[in-house]
Length: 274
Image 1 (cartoon, one colour):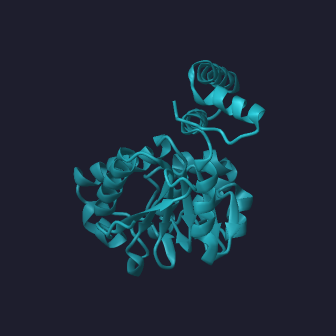
Image 2 (image 1 turned 30 degrees about the vertical axis):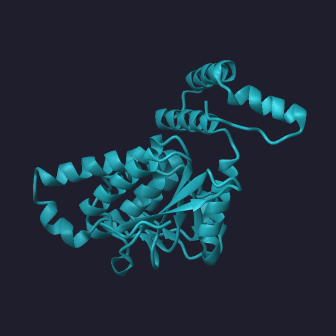
Image 3 (image 1 turned 45 degrees about the vertical axis):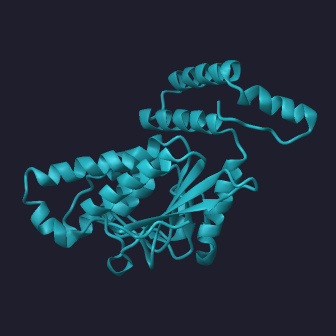
């Protein structure tokens, strides 16, 4: 089932399990003639899509991609000519971008960037707020803010060094160069490279694998991964948080013992997400 394009973004539900109860949301930035710029209208629409997705039971994964030859080339530079002169609206826009992109990090299921073509500036910041990325062979990924006299404000200066290390992040930010798909994997920005015509299929296959897992365990695992990544790595605190959450999940949930019983009985587990 597909929702019509609205505000530069459209989304579709894709059933990814045999029982037809688990589905993935395929979210597509949909202004291909402008390389899918991220502006206020897109952010409002994406915000509303997240509301719709979390309100419906059964979503196990969100996949984000771009229409045409770009994932997203970033902000609307022509629109910025006026916006950046407004001391009220511009800070509000950046704060709202942080808010909307940040919602992807706290959804109780994985968010996967399916990166096609050009990905720059705000497009890179969108990628960095996803849990992982699959990249098409056509992908070219960089920051690019400094190429146009801008500086990153949507999270790249904070998130990129955490993702690929400070030296590589500084090199990309200051040089303005773009990575190939293979380089993006080598740098740790993406999990793997896939053929362009298989990008969505590979994303749905990943969602199908997630659909077989306990949604409660998935939500807990994501929360811990994101919390520790955001805290930038105190190992002792991380191990303590992981230990405490795992014990609570194992001792109180339906799904943990159900998974063990199913293994012992040589049957498919019946997870209930509680």
